[in-house]
Amino acid sequence: MKRNHIFAMAVCGLAISTSSHATNGINLIGYGAESTLMGGADTAVARDTSALNTNPAGLAQVKGKLMDAYGSMLRTTDLSHQDARNDQHADNRYVMLAGGGYAQQLENSPCTAGIGFFSQGGAGAVFKHINTPFGTDDEMSSLFGIAKITPGIGCQVSDNLAIGGSISMIYASIEQKFFYHTPPTSSFAGFKNKGVDTLRFGFKLGAQYKLNEQWTLGASYTEKTELPLTGGTAKFNYGSAGVAKYDNLSIKGFALPREVAIGAAFKPNADLLLSAKINWLNWADAINDVTTTWSDTSSSFAPASVVNVSQQDWRNQLVYALGAAYTYNDKTTLYAGYNYGKNPVPRNNSNALLAAILEEHITLGFARKLDETWKLTSGIEFLLPKKVTYDSQLFGNNTEVRNEGFFLHMMLSKQW
Image (cartoon, rainbow, N blue to C red; front, side, top):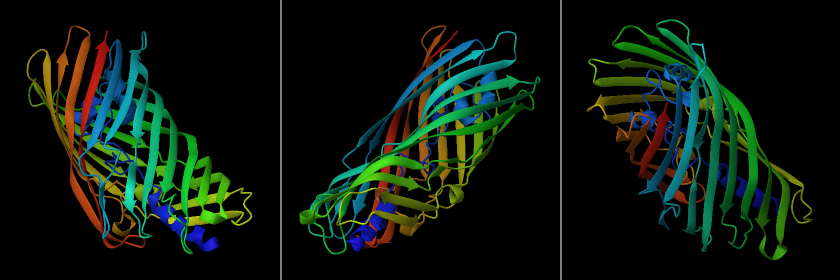
């Protein structure tokens, strides 16, 4: 039976995936409505509670008290797997995200402290009806979620310079299912993994420097955070031989990458703000070899423990972001942005469950003051079409994955 495990683990190495809404690798292009609607060009602009997860120095711009609550809905229009037997769209066409934060200027201090909750990544892809190479109709799915609780502080240390830092408590989890109801063969057994998760800590540092009334520079550094997923269980379906249950499942080798971002903001006049950012993401160190371990089984027909190492070999990524904010009148601000980051996933490690192939994003939106304290920000993010053709050991040559869609973003803010 060992060969069954070996084949299933090779598939598992591809199926351990990122979210279907992953954009800059497994990261979103922005956090909070203004950050996102300016295409993620936020390093030199950050000025609401999303600064906790973009550039903590921006918290120093918050005077008094500020509360943000945001939600996003993703509609995938073509998250698809295609091979000689299939041209299937993922069944989970909608994904909901939420987050928010609170920040308050400290009394008699040039510092503002805050705490926020952020959806860093998540959702995944679910294909309920794939025509398998074994002549059956079965499910393949991978659901991966990453969320953060992030306290931080930003301080105005001089008239021109602000610095800040934040610490994140990061939670991640994965659940998977791969052809579990397909009868086993000499080289295959379907499986399902569930319950693996982790709780880790990370940090971010940032600075903003105002050169003059028109120019502001920004920079941030984010340390790598390992995400060793443990504590799960798994089942392999061996048909008439029975189901082998493993009480200890771990998946190690995933991490949020080390990041270095630099940015500049320019105000040519009182109504227009232009911003740019370059962000380096060290994916080559974050997602390389992924080790899956199944152990602790009472099944006599299955190995006591099995270890598989799957090479992912992600490439480092440079993300370029451009954004604009235009004050239309005293109550309304208009936003636009563009974000580009080359797909970090090697072609032959692609998979419909590994949907981190998107490269280009266009954003449009607005903010509207409802009264003296309340503001509504909303807009749309277009995930422009991207497809990758690759050779798959399981599905054959010229297998294709496609991804495109759009986000609807909304944030309600109160400042007092």
